Every structure is written in structure tokens, then in C-alpha cells.
Length: 302
Image 1 (tube, helix red, strand yellow):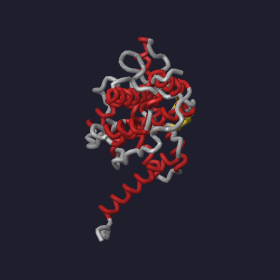
Image 2 (image 1 turned 135 degrees about the horizontal axis):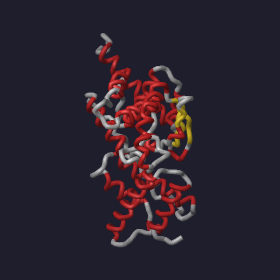
Image 3 (image 1 turned 60 degrees about the vertical axis):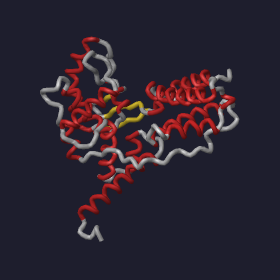
Image 4 (image 1 turned 90 degrees about the horizontal axis):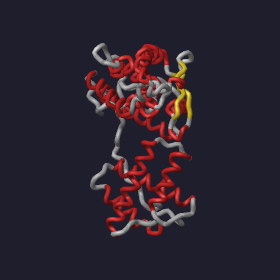
């Protein structure tokens, strides 16, 4: 293979899509990060970067420049994209060593995800009403997000055939195209059943016969539309926090753990590859309990 970076980047992106099963959205994110790195390197040297020129100095210079215009989480994501790309080149013996090996990822910013109270969730679920054009669809989406903890991309990708209303189960294709079965509860089942007549009307355009959730043109609803609707209904419910579909996923996991669910069960339901990812919710629970204790216990102030 040629020494030019473009050919190797395209091969890497095809590998992510075909071999790893990453979504087009994720692949596009990798493309942007790698293009940003190569563009900066080219601007600094006056010519297009080649693989043989990859070294720790160029990577360190790129990461250092990011801090002035990006959050730590964004810097960490871009560095992670580079690391994954370099590992790909190492496995194919294009590189002899990892130019990012000695570069530390930035420390996190202490970000805590938005977690709604049970009362806030119930209020949010009640928001779609007679004045909303697709109230039945929107209620079904909200119910399913909270009942299953699905990622927004997983919800948008659902086909009608992936939902078993009789068994109350949904078949989900998660990250890396890994499949899992998730129970969805009676409220979500009832909401989907109430939406199906509206779906049949939307289907008349015949654009997306398999998709469960459709837009006004009969096509598969997008993740951006779902995010916009969740934000709108949360604002209508008077919830102060900035609510996204991921907040419902966080709330799903946190509420399960608060009710005594086993950590490994929650890991399976969320589709986490590593238990350590799920364990973050236990820290969140401890933070919540500490805050309640400090606020409520008469001796908490010492």
C-alpha cells in the first residue's frame, strides 16, 4: 500500500464499517478527527503527511493545539480516534511503533450525566398530547427509551420485526452490531400498540416499510429528530436540566440499581461490553446518596 495517509485512512474507515460493524455516524466522526489531524500536520510542514512521517512529536503537537478550542472530553475522543487508527496500522505492519503510546489522555472534567427523578420521568412521559401531531408515536418513543435504556441510534434503527409485543421483548443491534434482547414492560407495549394505527397511515408513502418509528414523510425517523422531540417535551414538562435521550438511558440504569438490580443484569440490558462502564452508575448512586444525606441528616454538617 502507498505511503500516503489518505489511502490508509480510507482502508481504516472501511474496516470500521465492514469488520467492526460501526454505524455511518461513528465512521464519519472518525473521518473528521483523522482529517483534522492530517490537515494540521500538512499546514505545519507545507506538504501532505505520509505514514513514514508519523511520530510522537506531530501527535503531541496536535493534541496540545486542541486544548485551546475543545473540551477535555473532545480532546480525549480525538486522541482515541488516533490511537485506534495507529493500532490498525500496527496490526497491518504499516507502522513499527505507536506514535501516541507516550501521550496521556486529558483528565476528565468531572461530568455527571443528567439523571431524572422517577417523578420527572413520569411527567415527561405524559407530555405528548392532543395538540401534538404525532403524539402516539412520540409517547411510544419516550416510553421505550425509558423502559429499555436504548441508545438513541438503537431506537432509530429499530424495525417493526424487532419488537415482539406478545412477549414484551425488543431485539436490539448495539455497538459493533452486537445483538441483545431487552424486556420493555407493559407500558411501552401499550404505547407501541396505540401508535401502530398512526404508523400504518404514515406508511402510505411506502418509503420505510421496516422501520418502527417513522417521520411525517413515511421515512425512518432520525436520531436528531428524536433528540429534538425529547428536549421539547422535557422543556414543556418544566424540567430544568438539559434532557437528551441519553438522560433517559442514564435514568433507566440508575433507577434499576436504586431498586436493587444486579450490576451484571444492568450491564447486559445496556449492552455494555465492559462491566467497568456500568459501574459508573454505582458511583453516581453514591454521589446521589451522599447529597441526600448531607441535605437531610441532622448530624451531616458535623
